[in-house]
Picture 1 (tube, rainbow, N blue to C red):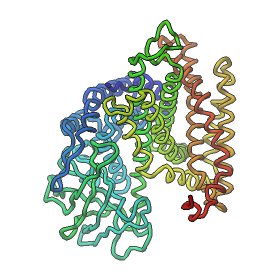
Picture 2 (picture 1 turned 180 degrees about the vertical axis):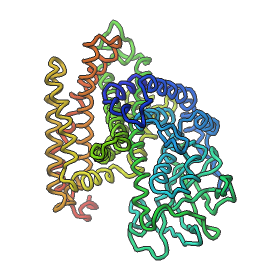
Picture 3 (picture 1 turned 120 degrees about the vertical axis):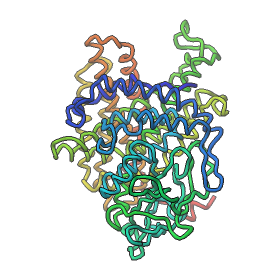
Length: 597
């Protein structure tokens, strides 16, 4: 099954759904036009479809190989990565002062969706590199930026994020890795696990960002510092020096993403790995969150990407498989796409992916405004919107992505459960997305604590207020669109009530709100997705009224939005009881009662 990037829908979201002129009017993006957006998307579609997608299945089957500390990626990955760098894809949104192209994050987001849909295992390398670029650019010294950023921006070097240790999964207060100062650098010792692309054969150097403690650091997260630990030390002239004291001692054998090396890294087995402090001692976790937020948005994109790839696979199979007597358009359809429940599965996948795309791109759009708008107040408003949306994009999109990949298996029937069709790989690959870069519960706890309770729901109220405009637009549009206004209104009412409950309750009863934090996150995701699907339908109807020649596309957008309103949006309202009262019974059993059967 080939991958064909949905460039028409991507262009619709970027240039029609979003107020993209607000981005292109910014001085930083004054040369970005609709034609440039279209050209970038088409070129990226060719690269991902022709180069990366064919390696997805073979990479899954072959996997990575470890021998004597060296990791070999699947056949074709090294050449594909060389093409990726040569074509400039890594530098798309990066700062021009370090040879980046300086294009909008929202446009880069569409390209990143393609990379992950075509070959998620491959795309994980650039994903971590992007986070390293963000962390060093925001918190590194001028010398560190000059030394590392040009090669990271070009993609000639890759970057990693080293947080997790055997005894410290998500609880980073338990980090034990140590860093002892020695002159202008530190010597780092410790072990890190689950390090994505920690060792590979695609680049000559790998720049590790490592959390560790200095000898006199206080306990807990306040004692963690961040260090740059290169695989090969870099000389003053930019050439590579000796191999650093860092080794990959094993790679994991995983359920999915077999083409992505997940490494156990040992630092300082021969005396200490040379590391360079980023910023100040004790502020490493705050610096790392810059990298983690970058990664969390991109992992949310992975949920979307795998869902869309699974949809394409399922649509192809349903269009080809002939079985039974179709009930839908019997004069046209002979395959199982004529069966109503297959239609339901496909429409769930299609509308869900479109809603996730709209939300992920909407978040990236606000990233562009937050980083580049000339007005301080507007930057702050957009940053607040980004901060609110990132846990929703990450948590909701990955949970829904796993569900939709599972539906893809269902469309195939028994053939989906065997590996030959490829449907099972999408499901296996999707499963990790709800776990790494912070599980869904971690995203949900962030949403109830930092993003709702801390500001007493102000950011969420502002988001709902904007989406009320979409509800009113539906009412004014009339016809089929007006029928979407009531379910959207109910979903927004539920989101308002849930946010008010969290804001008022979390301080006194954190165990109750935490127990219902994932239902709250999913409620927010389905409601936000519904509002943006409603906006899509209104924009599509306006285009059709204006006589746009792409009428079939716009009609499909309206139908998809209507389906979402009937089949997916009600989940928002259904989640409200769990948010408002679910904590009581979630936490009621004793540990012994759990064990009693």
